[in-house]
View 1 (cartoon, rainbow, N blue to C red):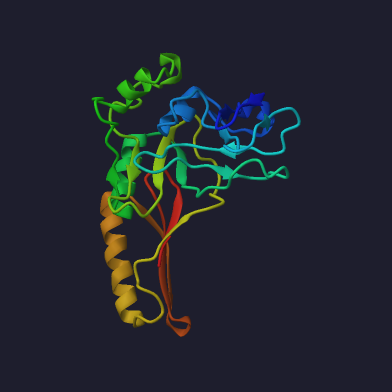
View 2 (view 1 turned 120 degrees about the horizontal axis):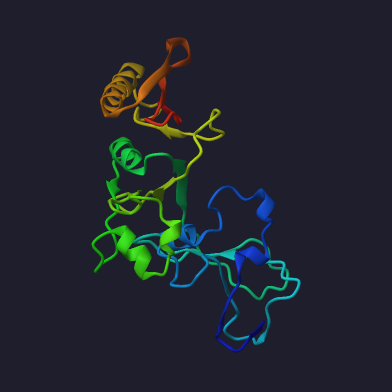
Length: 239
């Protein structure tokens, strides 16, 4: 693939990924377009050096991932580039969580994280209307997908965007990662104050649909924490 000075070259992720290791919906147009992805088919972008003409392709040893995350910035990150042709730029982060009921998860996690449901881009009544305008095939959109927001954002713009992706398969094992909601204030805060903050958050999230797995009350270690599950069984901690 030849690149003229200042030109941008699109790199198809399917050419540089092992599909056998990809999870459900990893490479669908729905997934690529959900993040307001650059108005191109795939959410992967390679940018040739504006001052250097050359060939980008063949035995390419760099995959540059880009996605416009809601109101955030275009995310471009060079994983490896021995040639030095591709520029490194700041990376933004989106967390995608598979689930059965995106609307229920949006409601719960917006409450848990202090986030808000993400409105559709300007000029579109719903996210589904936006995806349709971007060319996502109707066959890739589950019934009801995008009729109400399925993503949440930090109203202060500090935390990552979180998208709840509807999938057919249920959760079957303990998560290999989890949220820690650090509400106590850290070790400089007296233990009784931290414990009160944790208890208040536990009560609030139980009302929102969470369940308590266990309470860790270990005053000798200066620890009071709660292990919980969200409405779909995903584990998280309150510390």
